[in-house]
Length: 127
Image 1: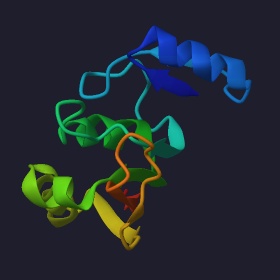
Image 2: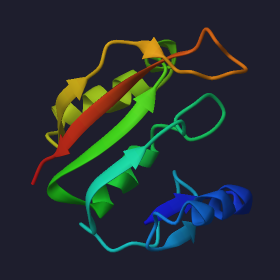
Image 3: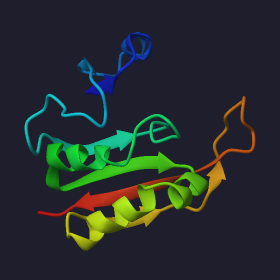
């Protein structure tokens, strides 16, 4: 399953022939999936300034099965200087997810922004 707000990005995804189904929906809003639908969710390059906010985690938790994983990228400075850090810590403190791993910062390989680093975060959804 693939999800994006942009029809152009969905068209690119369709051309890759690796998705069973594609959905035009908005992260951060209620998603059209039943509770506990997915074993894992992967979000790459979406949590960035002026794009998707940390409140999207609530809906991602809802649609991920207990024991499933939510894996995503964040820029280190974005994590530190926005509401992502307190939101992610609050979800741990509420017992909703457990941090499994976070990578060291690595070069994001963005041609237009050679100084951008990323980290990959992996959380396990608690039952």
